[in-house]
Amino acid sequence: MMTAEESLARPLRGDLFLVLLLAVVGALLAHWNGANGTNSWQVQIVGRPEKTLVLDGLVAATYDTGGWLGTATIECDGANRWRFVRSPCPNQVCVRSGWFTSPVGVPCVPNGIIVEPRHQPAGVDGVSR
Amino acid sequence: MNPPSVSSPQIDRVYNHNPARVQGLRAWTLLAVLSAAAAALQVIESPLPRLLPWLKPGLANSLTLYALVRWTPGFCVALVVLRTLIAGLALGMLLSPANLLSLAGGLAGALAMWAGLLCGRDRLSLYGISIIGAAANNLAQLLTVQWMFASGFPLWFHLSVMLWVSIPSGMIVGHISRELLRRTA
Image (tube, rainbow over all chains, first blue to last red; front, side, top):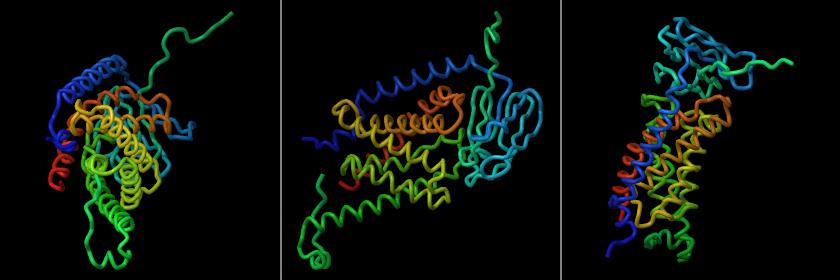
């Protein structure tokens, strides 16, 4: 007779169902988000809204912004891609991640910087009477 | 599973032939060893290049799953807390936002795997339980970022990528846990 540990070691049908479920939910979420592309980005420093920067994804440029730990440099390549060029964070995870494209928004957690898609408000933008 | 009896004469002498105290000593020692090993895995994994900042296999979770199956949920939670603090200390990020993200993800993963172990009996193997843990770990980290950072953060896009990534990473972690359990049976 198998012990509980031995029975856990053999893959079961429920595992396959779980894999399919996650793959389908992931695909649906990606499809749903795929329509939300943008050409502009905003760089926010958590707790310092006055330092918010707007990046135009279609203009090649380099931007410096001050985070919690120090100044980070963000580069846009003009083809709606951007990356962290320099950051004072300890592990340099953001820098090593390379180029990002729409609709990904990425934070550098240690430095308190978040770069996220900037969506234009849709529909009615004012009310008069 | 109860730990095997310890028959070291030195330990017996120090603990005055008290089996409960010897068992306690053994549990603390095992917790220390597993925490150090899990923290080492987390530190080693940290500088590896990745597609998105938080996408990594989470190899330290293999020891969490091992502790959950072989020991108790309380032991497992203690292991997650200790390994996060040790890894944070080693990486120079103790109690930083990144360290708190790791703690939130680790605890959520451990709780989800415990729930999977309880509810998925005869339906899920170590692989499935590990995938649930990986998905919960990712979701908890994203929700923590959402809470700590901006409200406009594109949570759902990242979640879709992380759900896909949790499948292979969960399988890798599940396989490592299976080998650990088999080799230490």
